[in-house]
Picture 1 (cartoon, rainbow, N blue to C red):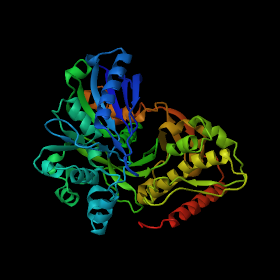
Picture 2 (cartoon, rainbow, N blue to C red):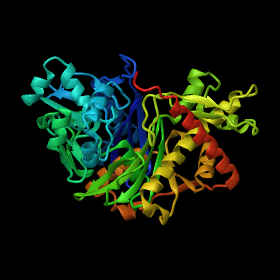
Picture 3 (cartoon, helix red, strand yellow):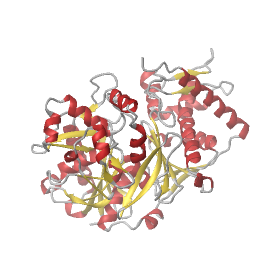
Picture 4 (tube, rainbow, N blue to C red):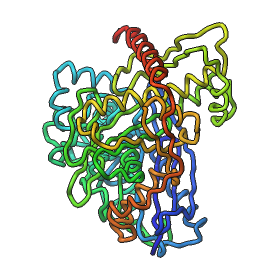
Length: 501
């Protein structure tokens, strides 16, 4: 039983990867599923699509690997965080489509909570800010907008879970309603200092305690899959939200280690050890992982637009056909032009947190063309990472003495041009690992740790392998000039905020 099955349930697709005992990949499968946009700023998934696509890719990966259920020691789950499902305890039927993390429909609820002066207590207990991004207000919205839902929830008939929790419940045939501390820490309902659901927070946001799952360690025996799913029961023994799973997959176990994942958006996490650090720069304080009842914390910064800036070049402007073209195209850009893209297509994330502003291009000339736009799009991701990097170092004084290297993963890291520019602007090494499937690897590790397949964290960290280190080679004068230009561009975008009305 030296195989571990990782479920990586993402925003646009479900994936399954079978890892061997030496963390090499035996097989993988992926399936996209539909996105639903019922109104401006609303994003939904059909929970049944999440479930059926997950089961399908698991079966496909097991078959590809040429193994059976008895060869698999454990299942680990990692998931799109904050996405919210409410379902009937008796029938398992969802009462509403899943409301996705990107969804902004609860902006009014959030504005009301802020106006009532609730943010200080919520931030103190959760490490989060009040924002539609998180799960709590999504649950409240479902209870208030689905006829009879609030009364049914009060009677204990409805359950709430993030996607990991929903999948666990389905995988175990409705026997287990549980989540891990990393996912719980993204709900606005969980006190990250006590490690418990918080009655005051539940009352403020309006979510009955009876709906909530049990919170466990990230590596724990959660239950086992029903035998009919995969030809035999398999232990489920690891769960973590996707960004925390990537942090684990990148072996960022020591305080001061930092990883940045580049997908649709970008998420950077800095391990701060057993002490939750309160950010003065609008970063989030979150649970990085919980092992043996002990929580390790992280500072997190979220960028909403990273890979989606490249998708915009492809689908919105039509100047490229494939993402891989952007690096070579950027290389051809006119070095005399300084074009800046601030990709605030859905507002700005950390450290600005302004949902109202929109994107802008600065420095356009008559000679600006596709090459300069590609250059600006790729560079925008690096500049935004710099902003997070600077905020983290300001928030956590120990970072000045920590060895500063950024470990990167995700689709955009395939672009050598972008990773080199990132190292140049950070003035720090950027390390790209051999195994790029770091999110799935993190889930597999948590499951395999509990099942005895993988060693404790320090020994697991020894397996991390460097594929390429990008070293900074930009002059200080150029770096400072470029960063100053970016700061001016961001200031211009923020100044364009016309307020709520």
